Length: 136
Image (cartoon, rainbow, N blue to C red; front, side, top):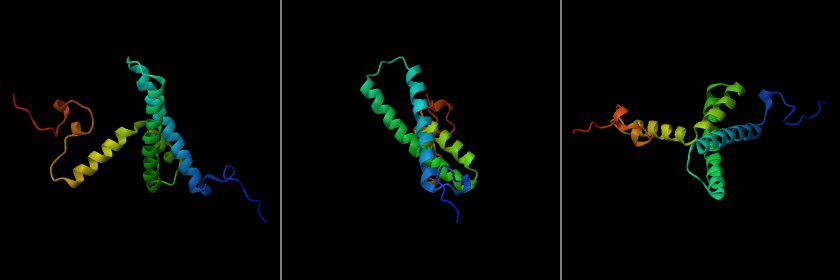
């Protein structure tokens, strides 16, 4: 009779799905927190502690969702857990930007013509190849 192993002692390929999801979400949330804190430190504007905690919590939640989606998509491409963890961390760091890019891709698929990137991501319309040309 084989002794029952805890999830921590299991080989990687036998890890339960709930443990993988928790790990992906944690990594993604940490990636989002790191990005939010670094952007906040670069910003010269003052922010109240309550607002900072609220925005940090929201960013961690959104980043966790984004990273979880990235890891789940990558898990369909490769069974290698290391790359799934990398996808979760990168997806979490990208957070809302990743969701914007996915929304843009889906909008382009549903529309006939090109959709300007500047309508989704804050870039100047002068560098967006799909943006309508403005005449002076």
